[in-house]
Amino acid sequence: MSLRSSSSPLDAVRVRALAEAFGADPARWPETEREAALAWLQAHPAEASTLLAEARALDGVLDAWRLDPPPAPLVRQVLAPARAVVRQARRRAFILTLGGGAGLAAACLAGILAAPSLLSPSLLSPSLSGPLEGALAVPSIQLVSDDEAVASTDEVLVEVLADWEAPVGDPADPAP
Image (tube, rainbow, N blue to C red; front, top):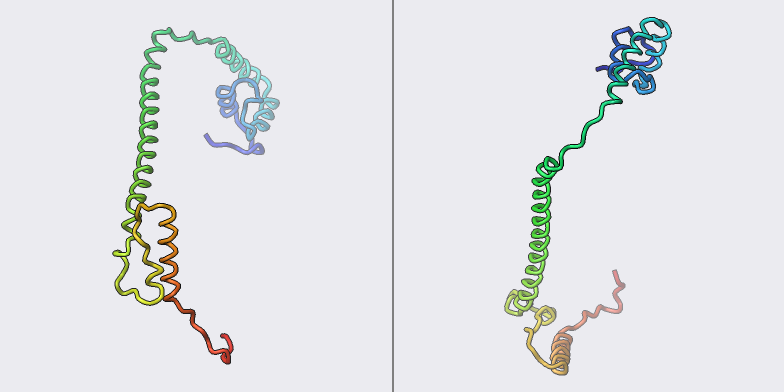
């Protein structure tokens, strides 16, 4: 069905099609064709009254038609599979949520367990030398008391800082 502009004239066939499709009330007709259809109705009053009377009769029949509610056993029969599908979808969503949470927890645990081996000095490249070698080597994790941990951390810092010398420029040279 093509929409026509309101400026193009309509014929009896199109006005009849509008009345049959949208009813006798012109307010229900498409806005793009309503003005032209009303002009046709005014220009052809005899045909318009017959056409609108037929449309009103059909509107009355359609308005009076009522559908009885379906019987309860039929409703249960139709809704039972739908409820089963909903339950199954909820179970899947719950399992996927648990699976995602368990996967995240496993990844975190793997990271915690792998961290000591990743920080081990044995993984450092032997080509490292110089003042930063000690700074990059992290001592292996040992279970010690708080006092011992502080002492061992201080010892590592003292060793690293003792080997490190800051480059001193010539005071006569201007800074770049």
